[in-house]
Image: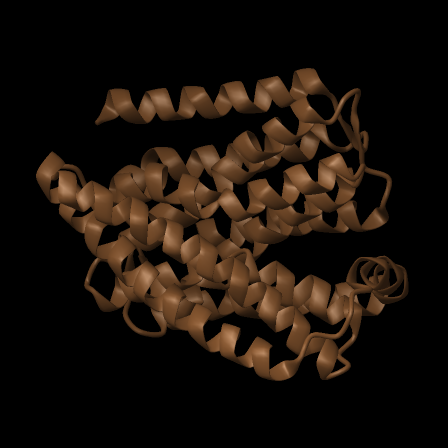
Length: 314
């Protein structure tokens, strides 16, 4: 089993590093093409941090291990809301202040995205016509953000994107090489998870729910720590919410296009209700537009309890 563990660690690191380079080169190409800084910041960067989950989901289905997909979606959403936000709130003393109206928009869409995922997953399978509902909701969400928040977010994004123009040839080369790295990193990540699950006599969905989801949320953690250090708490929370919304609405469709996604019973009976509860709990605690350090400890503590329950059930 040791070779499979080493393969998983190396493949996951390759996947995360490749996704980081892919996003940076895509940003450079976007600036060279004179795309709106808002479009670059929200869509290229936002989707870039979710590339590990997206590519892993597609390759999991094609490898015949579709149960990895809902495990990773649920695990990533739970770890984003509880662990990643908890760490950010603990670091951001005294409080994380959330003054923007767009945070409230994301909060409402978060609950809607989780409800939509529950709706299509409750029967234990996700087909592409069902998953298309999520894509439609994500498009509505994107259009609403662009139309209602364009001017303010455009200014914020422009401040962040003011860097020298990168040469497109270099960015194209990095984009190609990182895309290759993402593919092979995700491919070996999925195959190693299957091998580890076989050796431990555990379902692959459980490995995806814990180890894989923690690994694929590392980009969000890195972005959040950087944002907190710059005093941009809203950016950190917005990144978490945007990632959760994208993962639950878009990734099921991307996977279901290739084959029906199976949602194991153990995920439906425990992890899915936990994700819904975490979303509602997060929504209620952030209505006052702030997250205190003690609330951060509470979030992180709940995530530890979630992991302990998974270990106990296994």
